[in-house]
Length: 323
Image (tube, rainbow, N blue to C red; front, side):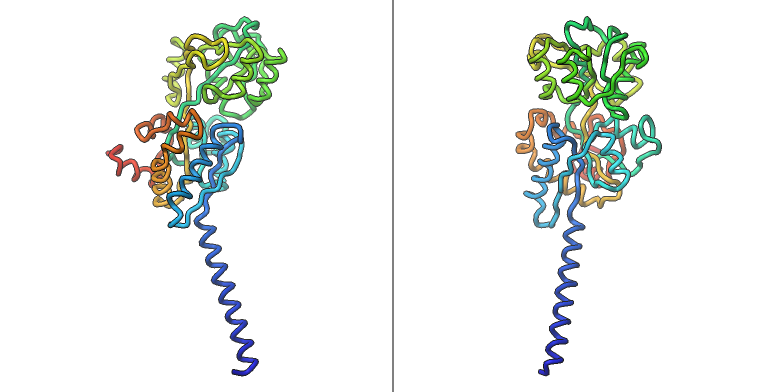
């Protein structure tokens, strides 16, 4: 074989190998999907990590990988889905409903947001200093209160709860802080109370109770009943005694549900496989956080506030949970 022919064949082989590598790389990229979670210190991030691990354990043969992205609030995650910047997302069911319908903090509907499963309750916890004289929601009038960051789900919940008790934000000295900042301001005496939508037993609330005598303000009675009737994504919940220092009796409140959502255009088989992997690895997932003990197949559709993804619909139908 002449040197020229050998050189030509070498070039052809290099090109072929390069194309093969590119095609394989593209295929690999197509099988890598993202899940928008939340702050590293919250519950969304470890659940997303558990989902990623479950996919790695169960779906390696299908060359499927889930990468976890630390993000912000439920509102941010819904917007990431709307922009096709995330494939899956963790968020609250009330925010999912607002996003899908294009109301509250969403100027237009996020119709490509679909449901996969609901997870566990996130209680609306109104943390108040005991020396602030706040025993009821109505006592918040005139007080220094953080309702949550501007545009957040917590802020919307705060407004809805205040309205149920005949108050508006103008009736309180409203601040809009993240929960960790609000907790620090409670400790320093610069706030009287703050709203926080999170799991019962959240570390920053435990820490606040440890350092300053506080209480959880109840959300109960006919006002809570009217709230749930108007906004069906709320449910009754209880902060059990002993979770926080000095809180020795049950406190009634309301809660929303954490949920896993997916882009509507994801292939049905992918979503089906992910759900299958999650429930197959659920005993291990439950070890990642105390709240994950609340997750079960039987409760997977409780509080589902948006249409199911076709893959999720097939999964639950195969499980005998849908007609």
